[in-house]
Image 1 (cartoon, each protein chain N blue to C red):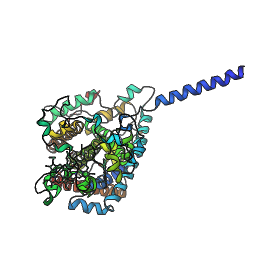
Image 2 (cartoon, protein in one colour):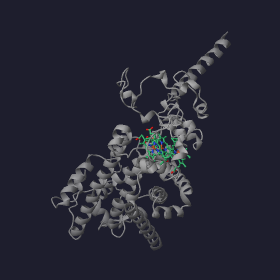
Image 3 (cartoon, rainbow over the protein chains, first blue to last red):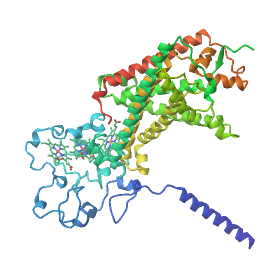
Length: 233
Length: 276
């Protein structure tokens, strides 16, 4: 009897320790969750295979009205006539009907987007990510750039194992100190200003400080200093 | 009892750490800037020196890891320097680099001294700006280490943090690097080399000792304290030999020239690059 309770004790202890060890693990970050489906969640790695079920590709609940991302959604966000305006943020071909599109390079119309690391340093062409014609709008629900599958269709081509979280890296980040970053990417904006203030503050303090020390010592070299040692106690 | 003519200021370990930091920091500056400026002609040249865009990154990453190990070892060393029987007294005491109220007061005195309104503050072992020098590195290094590791393993990072944290990491890494480089190559080098009282070079960190007159002039309270504690005799130290002086003068000036070269070119080409 006593032997059984001994094993039982050990088992209970082990269970408690295991539970404790699990508690010590960090909680799953948002990054570990798959954004693809409200119904099913795929594991991180599976998502990178690019396999998705058909229903995920359609917009959620199939809203009848056109929306602009970032604008308040509601039952009737737009008047019926406004809903007929072509919204380039949701087009299968984002350049549909743009005059002289064929004669121009991407950079002429999108100079801001040509400043990212991938373009400037890694020498990628726009099409290595955005693909051939037609270039769909980012939010178009079948677009390979759509945030639900961007990691698998685009990033994983080069970054093996890219997850949805990884793909939330902003490729075309706004200029860090700009007003656009303030609304679009506030963490970047405040990180930038924090570092700038730190840099300017440190230099604005220590450069004059060093110069004054230098100047004063230059003129003071011969004079004896008042070594008031008791002062420092 | 005759006063020693030179007293010890830095242990061998302190000096080795300093040389370690110089070498790794300069290497990181060179490889880091060569990548940051790779879109400019100058950056390309420096980059080629380190084997191109990819190889320079490998060097940068390994040097960074070596620095991190150095940082951890140094932190352990710090813990051994605390007198654990009286931790508060030793952490806020005059031998510690932790800022305390005396520093604020001495800074006030220093301001008055600038304009001839008062005497030079009687500094103890560390003056407030020496402390700042130290802590600037001590907080900069972990920040660069954390953001550096994030950028080194972007995929693993994005398992724990959202991917856009990589945008932030890249920004912080570059901004902190620029802050460190400008601070070291302007302020630290000015204090170490160009300041009239240390021109042509402040040798203390290399020779490990300072002449007595200099110590009395710059750190009167420290000398006074050593005297009172009867430690002055044990701090007696020999003058560095000639070959060793030659060596560290060359080393110091090489570092200075290198730093100024990096800084000037960095500023000259700053308009041609963006932080991302």
